[in-house]
Length: 148
Image 1 (cartoon, helix red, strand yellow):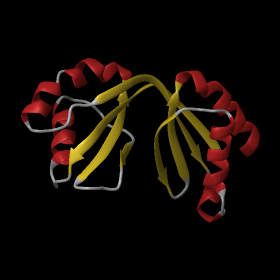
Image 2 (cartoon, rainbow, N blue to C red):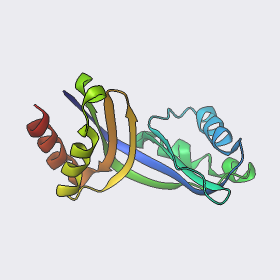
Image 3 (cartoon, rainbow, N blue to C red):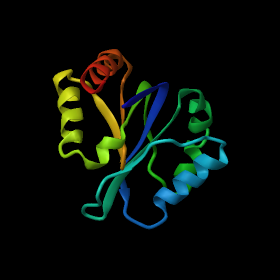
Image 4 (cartoon, rainbow, N blue to C red):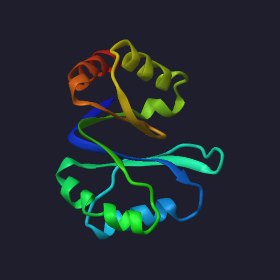
């Protein structure tokens, strides 16, 4: 099991975006044009012709991101909600792919610690969670204890 932590991460959320095929694409193109590297990308299932999506960026890119807001509005994109100063914790383990209940155990730990989860992404052998900086030390310690 590998536990990797990235500090100073901002969550950028776009809530209640109209469901059309270019809203996320347009947003990500504008952000890329500003020279901002996007990391975690998350999207909700659409309901009633709307959906929400978000991604993470390094806190240092906040001035560039804020500079894109006018262009995002002009393109008809939803203005972002931004939450900075967080930590991304990645749990990576080969056994994750074949272990029933692994994710449930991860979220049981997060809930026990009352960690505020801001974003989640997963892969076959990893779970990435973005949480408040204030919760991160306890979460990392618990993950290392539980999965070592």
